[in-house]
Image (cartoon, rainbow, N blue to C red):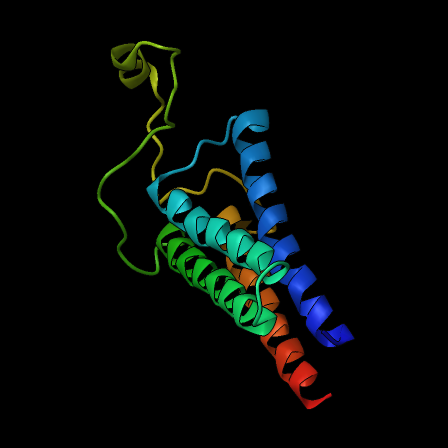
Length: 156
């Protein structure tokens, strides 16, 4: 692989891994429990990490990197939708969710003591941008960078 493709591979692995690490840090370190749409944003990042890892082992490497980039992009789109719900631009889910495993080993206790997490209220913002908004921005820009690097690598 040429340097552009290697950088695309590093982005395809590093960005979703770091975003997932941040999500879990905010959840377990700061008590910012995810709503249902927050979970939806995590699933494509899990896929992206797996696909990027495959790109280190199985040819054609650029295919796996491209698929990882696509997964990162999908997470960004979900984050954008979620941010729009939080900002009141459109209607989102009408249900709430709570963290899995809250309350210890008793499932009934976990249900009774789990905090309700609304999808239409941001848990945290910085400069008016919610966590979903940051995921949308970082993921979409990173996915575009991955695709540009892959195209550049094909020309090299």
